[in-house]
Image (cartoon, rainbow over all chains, first blue to last red):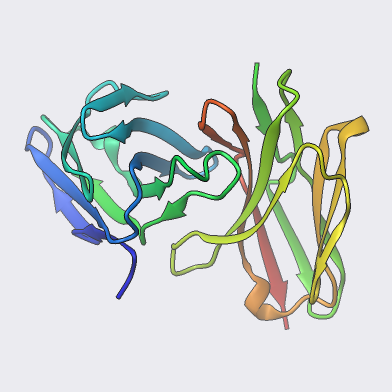
Length: 115
Length: 113
């Protein structure tokens, strides 16, 4: 089984709908991240969480919210989806004991389309 | 400011050619870490290598090699004898002690048979 899983893997939704993307990990890592990838822009950080009670905005947090329900779960919500939030979304994890020396571990991605 | 620049948007080569992907970074931190990730057409991100700012030794792993030069703030990636399976988007990334990971915009490599 994959260490970092994301659900759903693909989602098409309409403008104005609320949508939640979920991330779960079995790596036992305390740090979790949400990124979005747009063509030609690389990955940009939306939110990150260093533990259950520590949540921080990233580079592009407007229009998004997050919830760290447990150490292993980190959800990203779009309260009212808009077409320019169409992108590939990645969840990632890392261990504070290894950070920043070691890599972040990425989930398989969620492809979101807002029509 | 911290930044990663991958000036090559797209590169096309024919199988068995060598290809170098450029990565230039900017940071004032003295301690930092550099990474390369591969994103094949299936979309997942595959970790390839990490290097810390105190280790300028070049590294070779099979057909892959990396050239880290602090003097030019570059961390270039060379694929020797490219293969069709190397076709992917490659990302260079910079990680600071703040733990933030800053990605370049990626280079799409297409290897034709």
